[in-house]
Length: 74
Image (cartoon, rainbow, N blue to C red; front, side, top):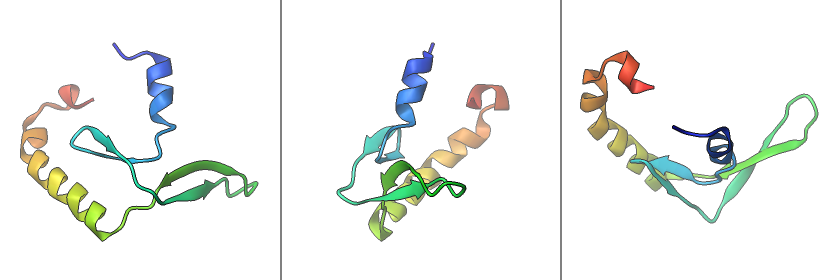
């Protein structure tokens, strides 16, 4: 079972997730709260190569994911 602390720590990742593996990049960008302008997160600034990697992984995983009942997907 996942604890709240483990779930919260996922929110602070600055990389990107592909095939269940967190990957990091040297470049990030700020996510701002639109109401205050405050920086609320820094996230990976993925480029073409990282995007293509993620799309390829998702495409490969989709048939097995689609076959799972909705209850098992969460």
